[in-house]
Structures are given as structure tokens and as C-alpha cells.
Length: 478
Image (cartoon, rainbow, N blue to C red; front, side, top):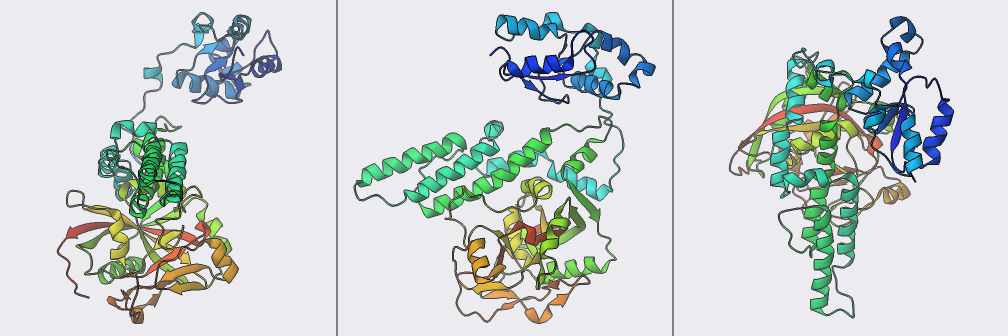
């Protein structure tokens, strides 16, 4: 059809034509009609008369939406055309050149009219500004992509849909790890190579070796989990703010949809977190972490969602660590569980949100380096309820827990914080402040405890902790 896939909006009144007639013309010819002008609008239909209305404050007061619609079109460079453009497209049965139908009175010098005042001061605390700048650092994003073995130049080709499809491909590989009864070894290897190539066509990496082991599937699943957050970050970084005079830092802060407030160092909560950091480190890891700053955080809508589990017994303040580049996704959308498309391989205790009761255990997932020694850790109120306890890996789902009357899983390690030094915070959370000691579990697949939740609503993010890593030899001092 003449207007197939082309999107239109209408600004103001069309003096010679009824708006309903224009909307019918658009939709009956496979075009798309939007009530409001947006960045994805292809054309705005208006009239010469609206030029004079826009320039007359008295007339404009009776059409308050007109100015916003026209300014949005001008800002995004969307052509504002006469309705005759539609008629010519329909007559020609294709989209014709629109230039002859542009309403010249709406033409402006976009650069001068919409120039962003980048010198406007930020309303944020300087320490919060520093956090925002760290999270939205494009150089750090590129460094992380290189570390993950991805082609930075092709990141724009990786979409949310492609990541989901890549998870499905990994599941297909998982199902084909063992040869069928009729396959020769050569046929089996060829099949794995073919499916692996399908994965690399979706996710361009520098390493394109065949994915043919459980370990390789785990590695690629972890890559896709990180890519999920990076893809969200890239999308948000490209979004423009509504207020063109707002400081860019404040625009990025709004994208996080999270209130970030510095926690004063004299507060009891700061002292508690400092003790947690100092005491729950382990000699099993080749690094030490030192607290740099702490921020109270409140994600939009998360507290309301948490109400369902607020009365559940056994709430603990637990650690969660992640790459610096993942935090835009985490703060804007919360901690998430691996999608249904993901293979079950690679999840020690199933698809859930993993936490630690020792800072070192979670800090390893920050992937800090000597060149980039700073990272962030989260402290969350976790509604654990009745915990299913074990000392080995086992694939567990939320349905398994619900059926057995459990709310969370704890896999005991042989080491953990000394529970004799657990304290209760002012808001009723159990907090581990003891130094590393033996748990009393003689044999386990884990050295340290891991706690897993299978419902995102059981998590309330409370603190963002900035830490600095110092790399040392393993101490085994615990």
C-alpha cells in the first residue's frame, strides 16, 4: 500500500479537511497514526494557518498542544507537510518526495533554537554526580566489551531480541551436547559447529570456536546476561532528555529511575556497612576491598512491589556484585532472573538472583582490575522466609520451592561469616558482621555460602557501595 509502515501525526487544525478524514486516509492505506509527535514519527501533517497561530500568543492559548507538537517535530527534524502530501502518495501508490509539500513557515535553525545549555549546573550532590558519570562512561563500556571478547564496532547490531534468540541457540546446543544414536562423531561435531555459527551470527565475538561443552555454555550464558544489561545501558545512553536546558548529568540520573542519596559518614548505617566490608573479607581471593562511599538507593516502584513479602520472616541484608557496566540496567530495571529462553546449564542452583553474606564473594563479580580498581556493590533487603538448605549444586525453580513450602535457597559453603557476630539493624534486618570462619559443614561444593531468591519481588535494593580494590596474593588468613 502507498503508506505502508510510514508513521504520521497531526499538529493543529487542518482548516480545509477534517482530522478524522486524514486519520482514515492514513490507516486505510497501511500507514501508522500517532496522537502525539515523537522521535519515531516520519511526517507531521499541518497547515499554513497554523504558522500564524504559532506566532500569535492570543490564538495559541486556545491550542496549547500545538507549540509542543511543532517544537518536537523541529527538534527531531521531522518534516511538517501539507495534507496534499498524503493525496499525492495515495495517487502514486507509493511514498513520493515530500520536499514540495513542506510548510516553509515552520522551518527554523534547529541548532540555535534547540541548543542545549551544557553549562547549566547540576542539582545533584557532587558525589552522586560522580556515580552517574562512572556509570555512563562510554570508554568503560567499550573496555568491558573488549574484555568480554566482543567487537565494539558491532555492538549497535546487538538488540534485546537477538540476545533472546542467542539464549535459545544455547538451549539448542545444550540439547545436542550428546550425539544421537544414529550420528557419527563427525556428524555430531558438524552439527555443533552449525549451531555455534548460528550463535555467532547473533552475537559477534572475537572467539568463534565451536560451543560443545557445558563449560562453554556457562561462559556464553554469562556473556549474554552481561550483554542484557549493556544493551539496556546503550539504549538509555542514546535517549535524549525532554528538558534541553537540563544538565546532561541530571538527564542521565533521571534515566536510572532510582533515587540516590549519599549516606552521611556519621550515621549508624554507615558504620554498620563499614564493619561488614572490613570483617567479611576472605583470604581465598586475591584482593581486598576498601569502602569509598555509600549511597542509599530507592528504585522507582520497588518498595511497593516488595510489600507482598515485607511480612515474610527472616530478612537479611545481603551483598550482590556486578560489573560497572551492568549498573545502568540494574538500577533502571532492577535485578532480574535469567529468561525462560536461557539453558538450565550454567546455573548452580537454578535461575534466580544470587547473593552473598561475605563482601569478597560478591566483589569478585565486579571484575575490577589493577587498571580499573573501582567498583560498586549492592546491599539488598532480601525476604528469605523459609530457606531450603543444601551443600551441593542442584537445579531448583520457583515452582519447586512453592510446592515444598520454601521461599529461598541457601547452599552452605565450608566457610562463612561467624554467625555469633550477626546483628539486627535498626529496621529489623539480620546483618553478618563476623569475620570468616568455618561453618561446620564438613563437605560442600562451595567454599562460601550462596543465597538465591527466585522472585524479583523478594528483593528491595537498599544501598549502593562504592569500593576500591587492592590486589594481593591469596592470604588464607581466616
